[in-house]
Image (cartoon, rainbow, N blue to C red; front, side, top):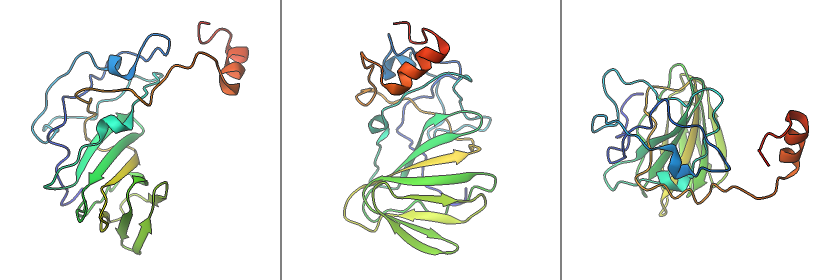
Length: 200
């Protein structure tokens, strides 16, 4: 990535690669991060590799816990990652931009969650409102502008991931993560197919 803003220097320490699995019956998002290890002020160290959830774990997050605006520049926070896929969240104040982005080996899908985004690519510019998405193929030079008057939040799914570390919120609320007492259609179908999957 060329000419990029800070990758959320004020974010907390990394989630350990061997973090606990999610158990919907007894866990909340806050339970997923009991141990932390530090990194440099930019969230990266020279030998840092992407922290990944162990294969097979289901890891819920509340993306609101990762909202991190800076008056100085756009911020990027990694919220989830596996060996094959990562989910980042960009936060841009009005009139901020990401600078020039290029991921030589990764396809990226940017999805606007809030605000109004302008994506600048080699092929031109496109504006997207909330729930608009843009596929950026590997190697494409691009960037995100917030030309509006409201803050902008964009999630970016990248495959394969680059080397940014996963971060754990200071005080995760887990408000968007819930354990419903009754299963819906998918839960009932999985239970019928796999036996007592949910332990109820």
